[in-house]
Each structure stands twice: as C-alpha cells, then as structure tokens.
Image (cartoon, rainbow over all chains, first blue to last red; front, side, top):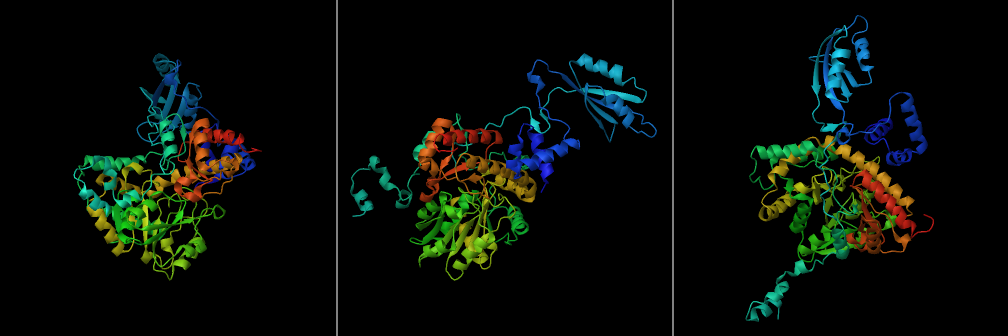
Length: 163
Length: 408
C-alpha cells in the first residue's frame, strides 16, 4: 500500500489537471489536507513543475530529438557533477543522466533540426576539456513516453450493456 | 393429450409451430424485462458514454497476454485434461491458500471452467433435482435464477433491503428456508450493488445454516475487488462451511480477462467430481491458451491486480461523491465496480430514468430492476470506464437530476 503523498504524486503525474477537490474525493481526504500536502511537496521540490505531454510530431514545430552518449574524465573532488552541470545548463538539453555501463553521461537534446543538433554537439559538447568522446543517436519515432503510448489503438470495443 | 401426442397426430411437420418443440425449461426463462432499454442502448452505442458494462475497461495486463501468445507459439493448441491443466489447478490452490487461507486439493477439489458462469451452471446442475428450492438473494447477477430454472429447480428469491445496503440478513434467510430448500446462492462482492458482506454478517448466516441440510454456492468473482480496510472474507472460511460449499472464482473481473472465458470452482471432491462430469460432456475442457495465460495471472496476482484495484477505488469514491452531489442517495459500495444509487427522488422508475438519461444526456446505465424486482428505484452505474468518461458522465448526471430534483 502506497502512502497518501505517493498516491497524490502518482495521480498528478498521470494528470496534472486534476483539481484539489477531485484528488480529495478520489483519495478519501479533505480538500485542506490535499492542499497542504501538495504545498509541502512543492516546497520540498518533490513536485518540480506541471507540464503537458506533447506529441510534437503532430505540430508544425516538430523538433528533433537526439540521445548523445558522452564519455568524460571525472574531476578530482567533484566527480562527474561539474562536467554534467556544464552540459545540462544549456536549455537545448532536455535531460541529462549519469550512467553505469559503456559511457558516462546520457544527454537528451531537443532542437529545431538535425543540423542544429549536430552543431550543438560539435561546438558545445565535444570541445569541453573533460569530454573524451560523443556518439549521437537521432530519434526516428516516439512510440511511448512517460508511460503514455503515442499511437492510441485501444478503442472501447465492449458491448453496449453487459449485466 | 400431451403436447407430444398432439404433435405426433399432425400429419405434416408444422414449421410455424417450432416454438412448441422448445423445452418447457427453456420456455420458463422469460426474456429480460428491460429488453426495450437494451435495444435502445445498442442502437445508440458509439454515440454515448457507457457506464453500463459489467466488465473491466482495462485490457488484460500485457504479461498475461504475452503468456497466451507464448502458449500459441509453442503450439499448445490441443485439449487439456477435462478438469484443467494440473499446473493451473495447483496455481489456483496456492492462490486460494495464500490469499484467502482456504486449502483445496489441486487434484480432486478444483475444476477449471469456461468462465465463472459455467461453473455456476455446473454446480447448480450437479446439485439440483426437479422441484428443489434454491434461495437467491436479489438484486443479483442475472444468471442465478435462469440456471436454477434450466436445471428444473425452483428459485426462491429474497428481496434484500436498501436499508441493509442490500445485504442478506439472517432473519430473511431463516424465513425463506423450507423443507425443500437445497441450495443458497450468494454473490458478494455483489453485482449490481457493490455490497460486500463482512465477517460478522456472514457469521450470522452461518448460524442459521448450521443445523440445516443446505449447501452453499458462493460466487466470489469480485473477491479481489474490495476496498476499504477489510479484505474479502469468504463464507467458506467460516466454521462448518468448507464441507458444504462450492466457491466460484474467476479471472474475468480481477485480471480483466473477460474474453478469455476462464474461471474455476473449488469445493469438496464429491461435488467437484460431479461438476466435472457435466463439464466433460458439455464442454470437454477449457481453452488451453486461456489456461496458460491464467497461470501467469495466478502466479503474479498481486502485481497484476493491485494497480487496477487502486484505480477502481479512486473512481469509486469519485462516483459515489458525484451521485450524492447530484441529489441521489447512495450507500458506500465496498466491492466490485458498481455504484447503486437510489433514484426515487426523481419520481421516475428505474427504466424511465435510464431511458430518459440515455436520450437526453447520452449516458448509458442499467435499471436496477434488471437484477430482480427489488432493484426497482435504483440504477447500476459501472465505474469500469476511463476517468475522463466518468467525469463527463457525472457532470451530465448532475444536470439531468438538477432538472428533476429540487435543491440540486
């Protein structure tokens, strides 16, 4: 059984548009309790923000996404954090993870087109002193993101009435 | 002269009289009283929000579907043993003992059926002789009464009361028992009301049954879907009940496996072997693919059921709250995926309510009297639907009742 805090987080992660009132009803708490918990979660930076999950391919903006494997030399005392920070501070970088395995950092980049991504890697990431090598992979199609399938096929095919 | 003699005296085969060939038992089962509403709902399917469906909106969890696909890939396309694969029966046995503290021998005390429905029919046919009385508390799943009639039995229905949250009381049970009573059919968590019977309430029934020569069929299809602090209690776990009861279980509701058609019955070897006899001649064996998929369901039951149960619980609270806000009295259902609000404040009958709600607001729900006369004045709302649809349907419910009830 998950706790009340986790249940609220789970619900908001699924649908950030739920009202405090709806969350209160669904989780069997008072609106005041829910509001207090959500405020607390926001203050503690557990909830970092509220956004929409967008399928950009259906828009004219259609940015390009690339996954970049980066090998780096860690720095004395600061490990990978300093170099990671120099990379993730660019707004084009959507996600940045420290990895186990064959490379050190996974950088997920979004930009307007292939060329911009390539230029970003060669001009901003590769020249950094601690960066040993990079490998760039472009995303061709997104099937599923954050638990949501992009191609919805599950029409309700149940009968009209079942007793 | 009997109908048969009459028929034999005719010189020619009379095609227009085909109905007279139908068995009396089949003819004794009337067509559904809410046929008109059914037709209307079917006509409007696709244009309406449907909260009228007694099956999960979830698709079967992927790991279970995967197990079914793998079974086909391996070419497991043959008959299984009549009673079901022993591995599945063992998995059911483990599941019953770890989940409900009930012990059944996989070899002799479990039969795998084609859905819980078949198991209900098997049990009734294995037990009932012409004229035996079967006690059926209503409102309830529509198949109970029909199965009893088809087996030649006499259904003795009990009108459960809204003031008792539609639970069967010991007094009502006592009053319905006659020397001809042979079987009591219980369905809790209940379809259509969502009512559950707690340990103490079941104990009071056990007291009544103690010295009576009566068997119990306990339909526990919705056992996994109970909410609130108390876990499901099976009447079979209470003193003296194990040796006189058949438990009906299934995969449809808890594991979202309705279309696979797979269920089971557990009980004393004598009863199970009799049921298996009918099953063997009528069905042969349950679908092999579904059985292998069901093994995965049993082995990782908590993992599959928990997320669905938690989601149902949130929807349940939402719908109960919405019904009350719409001016409909509504007891808190602690099981299944139904809410059963009282619509009498609107001045409409159950059928009128559902028909006009469908026409004016394009939302389908089911009249309570479809599940027995005592369901009149109530409607069944299924929350096995997406939160998005539930939210919109409840908005429309409020505007519908707002036009009919003051102060909403």
